[in-house]
Amino acid sequence: MSVYYPVCLLCAYGFFSNLRPSEPFLTAYLMGPDKNLTETQVVNKIYPVWTYSYLALLFPIFLATDYLRYKPVLIMHATSLVVTYVMLLKAQGMLAMQLLEFFFGLATASELAYYSYIYSVVEPAHYQRVTSYCRSITLFGSAAGSLTGQLLLSEAKVQLLHLVIITLTSACVAFVAPWFLPMPTRSLFFHKNTRAAEERQPRSTSPYEKGEDLESKVPLKIHDVSTSSRFTDMGSSSFLEVLRILFDDFKQCYRCRSLLAWSLWWALATCGYFQVINYAQALWEKVRPSQDFEIYNGYVETLSTLLGALAALLVGYLPVCWTLWGELTICILSLLMAVCVFVMDTIRNIWLCYSSYVLFRATYMLLITVATYQIAASLNMHRYALVFGVNTFVALLLQSLLTVVLVDSAGLGLDVFTQFLIYGGYFAVISMFFLLAGLYKLASRRRSKQEALGSSQAETSDSSQ
Image (tube, rainbow, N blue to C red; front, side, top):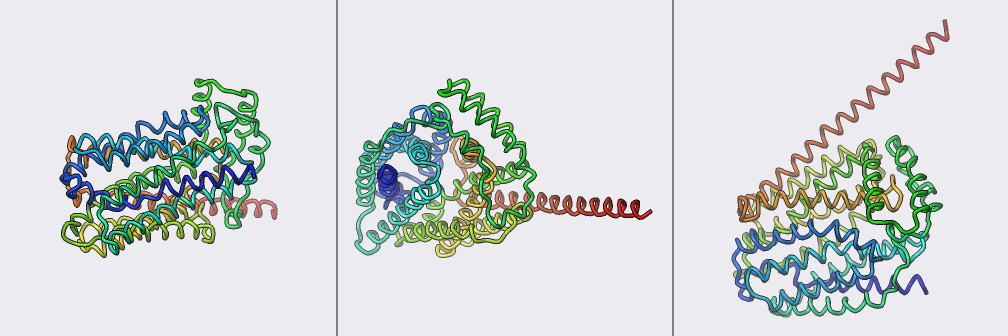
């Protein structure tokens, strides 16, 4: 019962906090009669605030989440969502919407408390199961919200304002759950119960990984014992000591070549993914204006979410040696993502836009799941929290640079079609980079095998003489 109580509460919170019928129609709502904002205001002045806020708040909230032991930050996440949708319902004007985006950035940054809380209140034996529960319920809530919004809009002919009211109601329901969660007694860095024995145990490997080259994992595993010892000895850590350990682990982790490669793709692709997702509605609004035509954004978001979840599920059944073929697979699928973006931009048919968007999201979900697994398989718990956080931070930093240069009115302030043309080229460059990396890796392996074969033949010849 002690396991099921927090898990059920957290799943209820994850479902209702992601049940947002208004989200697929946010751009149409802001540019419609309810808010009466222009495309330039929405795309070039309001949406960029979310990117900047998320970037600025991510690291402080990462530390605060651990120091405060998750629950207070989870409550802050719930509060930020309520404030966001109250402002979306009541506030008017561009400045108010920019402030709204700040609160939504705060909510997005503090979402990491949702995904990390459960590990502090359940035993390691339950990690895999509770992770699947908590992550799948958020996808289900998001898909249910998108589908509900579309059905209400298409079949019941409700106004977009009513979808915002339903979203606010769902956020208020979610707001109740975190208050009843038990307060954790431990956290990852500042408040630790010793789990050195757990971290010293070797991680399980998949059937497809047993034959892979694990050379890059050795340095990380050697260092794990000393790191666990430091955490065991320290008990409750000071802020400076935590920062020192994080920096030492950062240097150690990113010396690993395979981890660095997957992390590089993670940061680059997530940056481009966020840009496409954030401004896709603006593109659809230009191709098929909601004031003149019926739109189906809700169906598209529902389908893309469910297919993304299915793609993530299929990763566990793909018989691919990722260590050998990882870079070339990244190349091919990144090129597919580039093609999807180019189709959305150049062939201005709404149905092709929708189809390309669904395929783009599903492809990203498949690859990011592989990247997550490949990175996590090399690391212990506190290290993959660090690496995932660093990768997300780098992605947001790159996204902020793209936003300030291409999107923000303080920069070039490009129209949405020109933006998507650049995003397509961006994914094409990622594809070419990993093509070269993959070919170099295959050539290096072939050369190494030839040298080993030559050495073996020389030894055989010497022994026969």
